Length: 128
Image (cartoon, rainbow, N blue to C red; front, side, top):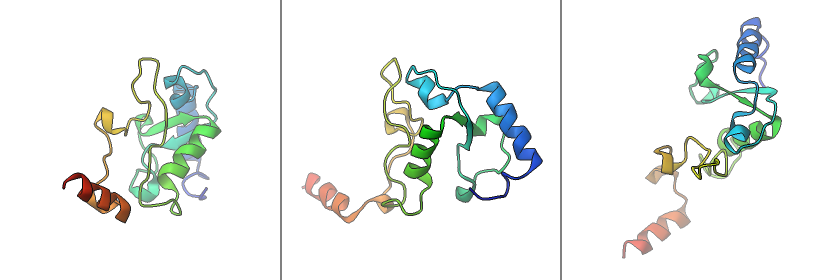
């Protein structure tokens, strides 16, 4: 974790406010699990253009496990491809995907630039 903005008093206040407003892990809650959140995550990483000190809606309360999963899926520069997979796998109690970026919820869909060569070949084969 980088020092800035996490070492600032402004971040500590923002983090405390988010955990007070949403004390449970948000992804776990969508699955029907009650897990206390100890981590506050930027919904859009600062490195990807996210605000360092966003409104509370720009943050997510998480347990360490969900935070590690999200970070590895979306923010890891060493991950395969540019943005691979979903941050949160699974469905909520109503059967909807818990990941807000899931294509079924109108979220992220890979563009032509995000495809690997094998995905391009599969797309070509499907169109023939």
